[in-house]
Image (cartoon, rainbow, N blue to C red):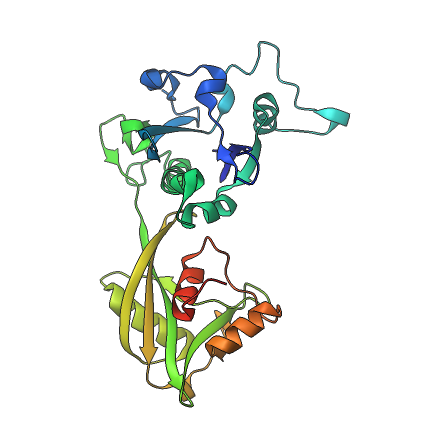
Length: 311
């Protein structure tokens, strides 16, 4: 892992790429993982247990290397030439990719394979989500926020500890994401919003963080009311998705409102809202009149659940 990216190799003809096996390339022994863990606060490299990969012949443990690769890997006895071809500056990550024949891909882009429901690339979804979240957490918790003491990685990357023995654990922030529906003019419609930060044309469902002391259901009602003025009278939970950028757990709902004629964009986060029937949404998407969230997003799955088909 490097800055939200994973090193991948070609998965074969017609197949998505697969995370590259560094253990096979460099001869790392998983049973000796303690040898590859940073033992002082001056290094930012960690070998993190990312979970189990479901294979046809059983589950395989996944260990993910993050941070200063040269601290763990034998990249050669000569000083690294970071000038590259034609004197273009390159990073240690570039050298690693060149030595292994791999390429770096953003976890956010790779995540689409982890939600399509089949194949080895799908099985990688959960381990990659875990290590992406942990890598962000390690990077931001090198010191104890309560005491200022330096911290070290322990428990295979799932905790940190200070010299005085105080342990820190990663956290996950819950958020709700909601497909808003209603009967408008005798037809069932979905309400989508275009956020000011996204630019014109991209429409999605409504989302926000769960606040302190708030239930998921209360958060759904509040966020819908704040962003479009809809009054929720019914909702159903449809599923969740880890979104480790840096540490979200998205809880997906479909909600019904009873005041569709009164909704309007809040003008702060949401710039435009628009009602769609199923036929209108399919036509607008087909003719590229609107863009929808990518396939790796739970928002896309909420929309397609309402549609009753994949786009």
